[in-house]
Image 1 (cartoon, rainbow, N blue to C red):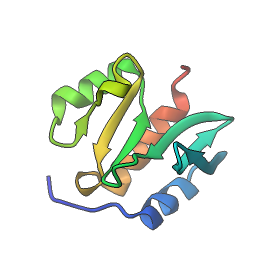
Image 2: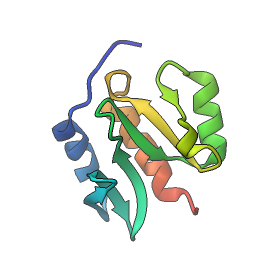
Image 3: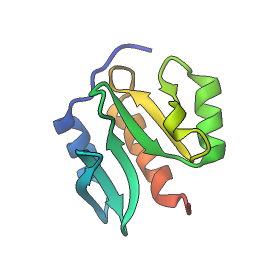
Length: 105
């Protein structure tokens, strides 16, 4: 996969295409919510984004592309996955955010 650094403005442009998503903060970083539920936030490392994708999708992503997707100890047991911003495209981010909007938990 080609390297493609997603900047905060690029993330915001992608999020702006999704109806009902609002920007706020979480752990002092930009975060996006739909109907009050967290969808995603920038990780404090500045190099990755935390995405709510559900347990099944998380497990699939971790197995299919471990160079892009990972989990820290903090997120074990939660339906969240982290993705390196230099390995994630805006199109893939949009798909994952749409998945997050469908996730119940």
